[in-house]
Each structure stands twice: as structure tokens, then as C-alpha cells.
Length: 88
Image (cartoon, rainbow, N blue to C red; front, side):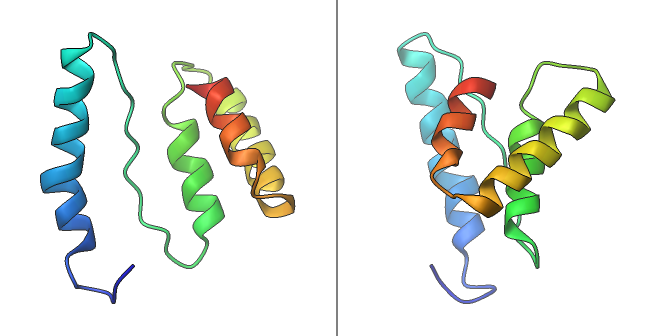
């Protein structure tokens, strides 16, 4: 947490993301990383980023999945872990 422009994203993109990729490579696992900015509608931004990790090329299905995830997140934030496990 920090104010806008304080370097939060820079730390994540320059340090944490490369570190996670190196760690995953060492244990021979692929990881998927979604980068997003919460903006004025953080749940929508999160749902969009998570759905973008899907292997599906069906845009209609991705739109439906994003809407369903967004609805679930808005109703109960505990559904995030369950949905991430399904998608990733």
C-alpha cells in the first residue's frame, strides 16, 4: 500500500515478478502472472486480468467468464481463490 506514484508497481515489476519467474523456472513449473491497475473499478480490472490468463480463444466465453467472476467477486470476495484455482 502506498500513495499514487510511490513506486509500488515498479517494485513489483522490477523485483517480484522476475523473482517469481526465476523460482518457477527452478522447480520446472510454469506460472501465469497478470498485471493490472485497479483503477475506479478494481473488481472489474481483477476479473479482466484473471480471465486473460485463460487458454481459451473464444471471446464470447471469456466475456461470459469475466462477467461471472466479476459478479462473484462483488458478492463474496472469498470466491477469488476458488476461481483462480479453476482458471489457472
